[in-house]
Length: 119
Image (cartoon, rainbow, N blue to C red; front, side, top):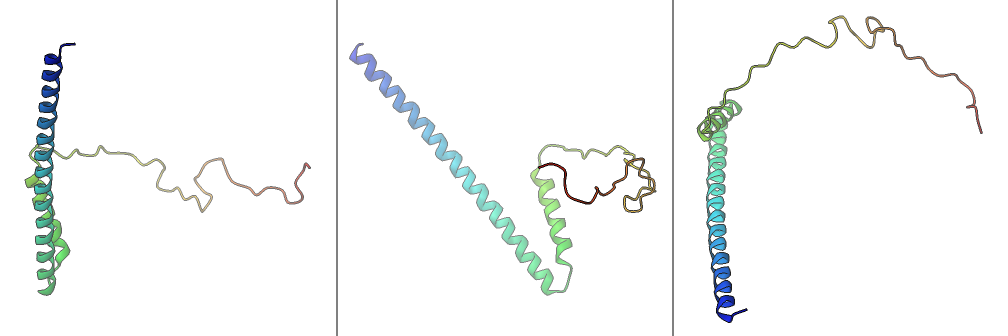
């Protein structure tokens, strides 16, 4: 191999590594900023909850409303909640496994008493 080609290949490899490291550092910085924002939002919610609790209001209801606002604001996609289809129950309303009625033909009976057969 020619030394000039080897040197150019090594320089290109070093440049590619440097680019990838810079990209990784940028991603880490974005992640840290997002984490800081989430921590700040949690801190604000705790402060709001504490203040409403001091005033004697229901703080859990306010917290749920705040979370829904944050989730609706954070989600950029238009997600429509799916409606559940009407499902019929697996058994009829009169089924009670403890009463022994309406369960069907199978019923549990205890085994025979006495020493077990075999050695």
